[in-house]
Amino acid sequence: MLDLIQKLFSGVMFFGTKDGLLCLGMYAIGAVLIYLAIAKDYEPNLLLPIGFGAILANLPPAFYNAVGEGFPGVIGTPEEPGFLQVLFDAGIASELFPILIFIAVGAMIDFGPLLKNPYMIFFGAAAQFGIFATFLIALAVTPLAGITDPDLRVKLSAAIGIIGAADGPTTIYVANLFKLGKYIAPITVAAYSYMAMVPIIQPPVIRLLTSRKERLIRMEYQENSVSKTAKIIFPIAITIIAGILVPMSAALVGSLMFGNLIRECGVLDKLSKAAQNELSSLVTILLGITIGSTMRAADFLALETLLILLLGLGAFVFDTAGGVLFAKLFNVFLKKKINPMIGAAGISAFPMSARVIQKMAKDEDPTNFVLMQSISANVAGQLGSIVAGGIIIALVAMFFTV
Image (cartoon, rainbow, N blue to C red; front, side, top):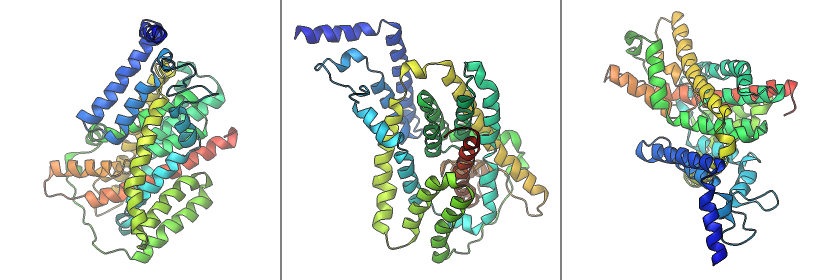
């Protein structure tokens, strides 16, 4: 009993050390993420598990052994990993969680609006501009944080650029494939945090780049239906095309399209609902708390983290701006104009970005309905972000070992 009290006391005293103060800082960050999830409803399915995982990952080592010598705690050691390390090795290091998430997302997506408006695929591509712009900027500024190794600079810059796509699973996939270690946590947290803040980040950028006259543009939506055959052929064809043109994207595109095929085939309703609900919920919980477990104070509270967060925000802004500016350029050649706000929905934050665009259109004109066109661009962005991720991986693999 006395031994237990001594260990608990040493754990309390730990917070008086430099490492202990850093842990307290991580508790504060975890609490902020939990607050945003509960009070502001910002992507609660992910921010709450991430926030709690950050708290778990920074419990003082003295507490780990309070219940008996050799108890590994939540993180553990290489010889005896704790449960969070087991989850990380099984789900993140193996890239299993991002793949499973994309199966669930694919089962949720209806590609019908995109098939009705196939030209929207261009907006999904244009909105990935921020990925490559941020990649180049990050290459230039990462030495300011003391990152001078060429291999690490290129891989880290590429992963930071992917944040702009607002596609969490692709961000995790790329960061883990590049074996970025301690940088995976800030990259992933930035990706999901900015994705949750789409309603805050996108409107100011859109208003800055568009006039009220442009935001008032009305668009007709063709109600012609898409055949079931087309919806079944689409995921199969996209998988083959992506696999041939951008083989590095095959795993993510294939899992997304497989989930969509389950949805559209019409004979697997039970599996489709399971993918949309049970699979999505379970993997999201495990993914969130595992990401949080990588937010260890010594690695997370560093200059590199601040740089990643700032560059990630820049990537997000560039992607939004790229989509809007492309739509404005498109309008130069069209008699029937497109509402340029649609271009901003080309990021991968599905369906949040499409809802933001519809709300902005409704604020300008309560009778303007552009949701279906926004959904089309948003779905195209989901594909575009995966392909862009594959291109980034292929470009890096040309010069470095991946």
